[in-house]
Length: 406
Image 1 (cartoon, rainbow, N blue to C red):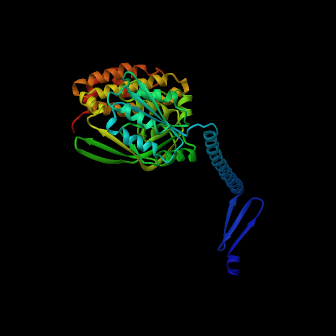
Image 2 (cartoon, rainbow, N blue to C red; image 1 turned 135 degrees about the vertical axis):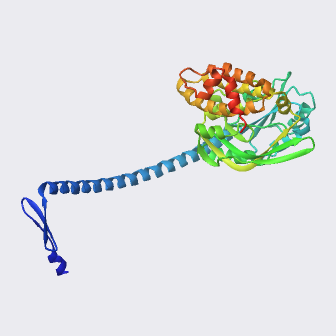
Image 3 (cartoon, rainbow, N blue to C red; image 1 turned 180 degrees about the horizontal axis):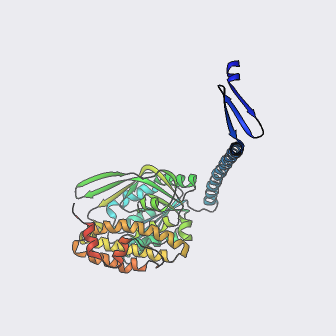
């Protein structure tokens, strides 16, 4: 120890700092010494600031935990209040709305699925849209033994959008479910969706489902899983990822009422428009990754028929035009956010439309998109190059680029 002590020594004088190492003296001028001292002081201050930051982080972490606990407590309180409101005021928890047109083949099975739900506190609103088969007789039969069933009858066929709007006009439930008359669901479908909404204080619940495709005597079943499970915040990207169908969702009625969300009176695409309007006005969704619904598509139905004629595309586009009109009725601030989402979805569906519409009608379709949609977008909103070309009717290059063969 003494050897190192003698060969390494430091002395200070008024002018220099003298460092002696192995008998060699090294002098550091006082200016350098001042700089070193400044650096040492900065290091000390940084150390103090780091300690302060660490303490602040700890405080923020504690506050976050407190806020999270308060949010959880508020959700529990909301759940209790919802349950109390439903019980004391005799308000059904869920209104199930079913539009019906010539559905006698599947209607009994569908109604049995609904009346046997484990969630009993529901109302079942059946809208008979001028059926010419035995659908109305079946409805009356079920209503005679189950007082939860309410029947609305249209004298003339008005389409599924108008039928659903009629159901909405008398719905009393806190939440809304829209089912199709030829589909079925698991007995605990409504209960699991209802609990998911309550426990997460979310705006919409979405579940996985079976997609059953019936083509003559052939039946194919495909499982459709939701992309996100659990509670999640809705931004425009994940809004666009959510399927537009109504039947695998549970909606909050107060959002529908507050924002005057309606179905367009179109043969097809009314569900797309309603879902998009609703998602624009929602902040949180909850995914239930269980197969709770069986969606059945019969290739002899209206969608298949119109698809073969190319009319499905134009009917769906009418629903897109309705959605834009709804957006333009909103405040200027809300419009920008909604138009961004609307165009994100429109681009996706426009390419899909062009793929399936007959070649001879592609220019007709793009002209309608240009005239009735893109030229109606507020001027202050900047369109991208693809939309500008369509708005300006530069169709030929766009179509050739979209369908280029590699």
